[in-house]
Structures are given as C-alpha cells and as structure tokens.
Length: 311
Image (cartoon, rainbow, N blue to C red; front, side, top):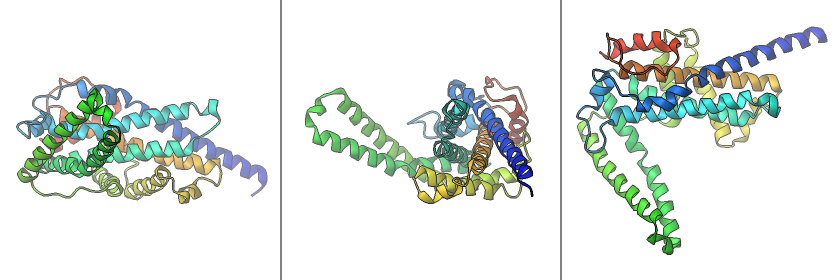
C-alpha cells in the first residue's frame, strides 16, 4: 500500500473514531438532567419500585430499595457529563486527557452496572435482598473512614468541643442504627451473593445482552459481555495507576481514540440501560405515568418493554 493511500486510510479511521466519541459523549450528556432531577420526582404509587419500598425497613428510610438503586446511576450520569465536558474542551486544551477520560468511563460503567444488577431480578424478595446485602457490603469501608475521623480527633482533642465532632458522633449514631436495620433485613430476605467491582459489569452486561434494549439493540450482541469486561479491566488499570494499561494507548492518537470510543460505548450503553430499567419500575405499568420525564425520548421504547417484566 502506498504512503498516500495509507495516510488517507488512517485519516478515515481517525475521523470515524472521533465521530463515535462525540456521538456517544452527547448521548451520555443527555442523561445529565435525569441524574440531577429524578430524586425529587416521586415514584408512581402503583409502580414496582413503590411496592418494593412499601413496608420494608421503614424504621430507617421510606425508600430503602429505590434509594439504594438510585445513587449508583446518579453517580454514573455525573461522570458521563464530566467526560462530555472534557471531550468538548479538547480543541482548546489540545490534550485528550485519556487517563482521566477512561477513569470517568470506568466509574460510570461500574456504577450503572450496579444499578442494573440491583434492579434486574424480577423477584421482589431478591431485589430487596440485593439492596440489603449491597449496603451491608459497604459497611467496612465506612468503618475505615470513621476510624480515620476518630484518629484525627484523638490527635487534636481540642476539636472535640466543636461542631465537627458533634457531627461526627451523629454520623456514628446513624451508622450503628443502619447496621441494626441491615441485620434485620438480612434475616428477613433470602440469601444472595453480591458481585464484586470486577464482576458486576460482566453480570450487568450479560443481563442486557439477554434483554436487548429496544432503543438500541445492535451493540448488545453476543460479544458485549467480553467488550464490557475488557474495557472495565483496562479502565481499572488507569484508575489505579497501573503502568500496564498505558501499553494500550501509547501506539498513537488513533488507538487512543479507539479506546476512548469503546469506553464511552460501554459506559453510555450501560447508563442508558440503567436509567431505562429504573424508569420501567418507577412508573406504573399499563397507564400514563405521573412522573416528569427527564430522560431522553429515545429510551421510551425500552422503558415500556422492560416494564412488562415487573408486573
């Protein structure tokens, strides 16, 4: 192949990757409003999620299930909005910031996958169990944070007379209250295992592959699980500062753009599915919803199709 032909081919590949990056970034940014406003939008009283919450561990919160499943996808939409802004700024910065971009995508993919895993089971008892056990799995991390806080106050006893220390004690009190409620929830729900961070993306991708979203079924074919887990692993390399991950983006700008396009494809795809799955269970089935719709209109066919799974 002659050099001019090679140059033209590379230019076409470069342009294709860049187009995919911007298109996927726009789709991710379109979820921003939903992520910011959905928490203040009441569930339909006749919805599946409202029934999940009803009478379940209400001593602590009235939205144990819906609240547990919502935060991960809110976190994902914020990361995708930041990724879109980073991409939009590239012409000014002349820097692809690939490590930051892939870190944002990896975080969004994992958070979206968590919501999908929590909500995807059709058995209400299992959905409740997953929420309880997921929150229980986080307790040691919070204990570690509280230890750091306590060590700080022990090293600075003069601070124990101030508001910060009072706030710390209140956090500890609420934490122990939640532990007691979780213990109650563990006894009241069937046992189920909680997938780890490196596993949940594959679990969610497998569910989406089996229930292809009506709004965009093509990307979720037989290889989506492998694509999603592959990206998650290299994305994790950037999150943890592992040198090996750099092997896959140092061969030139084209490979960097391809990796970014793949990461955005996985992260935005899982986020759209998580939003649709949440709305499918937050809205009443078979009748017009009373919820304000902050998600893109393109997701509506998937919301309607998946809602029938939770009747």
